[in-house]
Image 1 (cartoon, chains in turn cyan, red):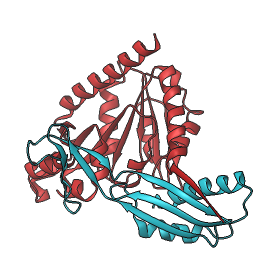
Image 2: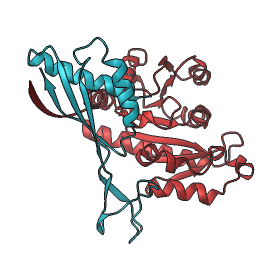
Image 3: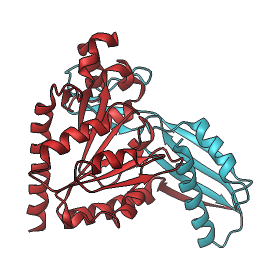
Length: 113
Length: 226
């Protein structure tokens, strides 16, 4: 359950922005979470419910936009991979695929009241 | 109400702490290796074998991560190398800040190699950069063949895979080829070392590779420092 630590980081980022802008209330937090980031949206939402209690984000909405996995072959260019059965090997030439996106975890924006 | 556009990396605070660790490690000229695996794969046993083989030629220190107990640090300390145990309580991984704090108990300037044994877990430790030079995964034959497919992130990010308990392969119901191919599917570049920490099979090949990598890392670091 490292989602707890991750949500705490999200809240820390939001609180420091709220303080910077002298706001007393965070009304929304928008995240972008890669499908290969190793965290699960359901667990993020659960951790958020627990950790926001009694904070500036107590009533905040949470939106999570999943970022699909995109891979590229160093020789053949853009490549395809099935998320269900992850094989990071190029079907054309057999060399390793590089992950272009789908590993990231970002706070895209927050709404302050 | 107003919207603040951020694009802030959620792991940013850990990445900063990891970069700070990195600077400390570089200035101390120490190579740092992060060992990760599921619980019970044999990380501590592999460390015992590795330390026994290398402690005569380099100064080694170990940071052990577990939820509870100092059992692992005690096992390592019995080999005569300094070991510091981090007990995380309920936290399922080590983070860069925990490593930083434990450096008060372990002087890296007195070391050539710092080994970090992460908490046994195939998910969470993958996300937390500690500032290490090298990542090694221990995967055991009795965990089943499908682990790399189910936990691709950690297998993808590792620099080497040690396949432990190879002596139990005949009883595991899976073939070596299946285990190897599933690792290669998510990480075609990482070398795979079949070993048995119990019988000693394959340990020599692992040590040869590991010694050479540590040498390379230390040479690179001292060239950068010069």
